[in-house]
Amino acid sequence: MKRRFGYAQILFAVFAIFGLVGLSAQVSSLRIAKPVRLSIIDVAGNLQLSKPAIEEFKAANPNLVSDIEYIQLTAPELPSKIKAQQMAGNVDTTLVLTGYDAMASGVDQGIYEKIMPKYAADFKGLLNKYVPGAKAAYDLFDGYGITFTFCPGGPMLTYNPDKVPNPPRTAAELLAWAKANPGRFIYARPANSGPGRAFLMGLPYILGDKNPKDPRTWDKTWAFLEQLGKYIDYYPSGTGITFKELAEGTRWMVASHLGWDMNERILGTIPPNFQGYLLDHTTWVTDAHFMAIPKGLDKDRLAVTLELMKWLMSPKAQAVTYDDGYFYPGPAIKGVPLSMAPEKSQARIRPAMRPAYDKAVADLPSTTQLDPAAMVTAFDMWDKLVGSQSH
Image (cartoon, rainbow, N blue to C red; front, side, top):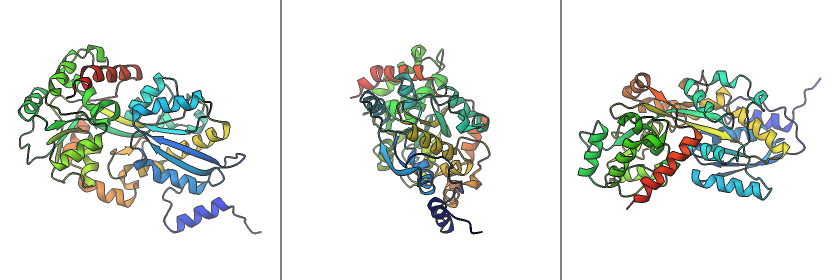
């Protein structure tokens, strides 16, 4: 008896033969009336980590997906765009890829579907599979988002050793250095930058503020940032700009975090001799990316979106997130070592890792970023007390 193969199975097999499929994930058994068009908004640079796996999902499941649209926005732009779709009764966006920033603002403004526990059957055992930092990030958002990738985060500083032979080791020394070298230090607006956010949220630990989880008590941090701002030319809208200016020589030191520091050296944006380090008394403020679903999707697009999310949380899809170290390590779940990553990722990441980074991750304390309400408060306070003073 001959075995019959559907178009999806044949396509997937052909891709696998020619090495185009690295996930070896199974074709979905989900049934819908007709293939749907997905529209994915990325406000975190996450497509660098996830797009290959998303495209493989599309190739393996032509019975589910007719097309995928990718849109990249800044985090502050996202809530108003989704709310406009919802108010018009025409929700086009099917999935949001975001960091803490638009996760917090989206929860605050009520634009996301509550995924868990309603759809727990689609993510069986996921909460027990998370690495501890990813689980802690998930817990902050009460089931409205699925933690997709994880990074120990920051705050770190990346600098040009030719210009900064003796980098400042304490916050006070950093302020004195910035005063002596006006315009040479920069960080991006925290509401749209992982390193900028880590710098803002890490300072209360470094400076010894009363309650690092409550920005209303950050007397030392706000005073420090106001003083530091006198020697900062402006606050870019994204982290990439800061590293571009560091490479050009306009800046000599920038706020960064583990993934950005590694990725920018791997990609050659900054020279390989540029250094990353941490100030004294640093606590890691971990970083994560999340998947969230806007409220208002029809039944079929919601079902396919959940199927895609389930695919992206598989170990082999998670291994792809090692990428070029952009969000090192990347995987949010246990049991996904670097040896599972594509060979290209392994070859580029291994030389870029530094023993000092591994030691700092192992030795220093870590904490999550702020909860949604506190994060919104912190961004508002930064905009009023710091950002508005930009010259």
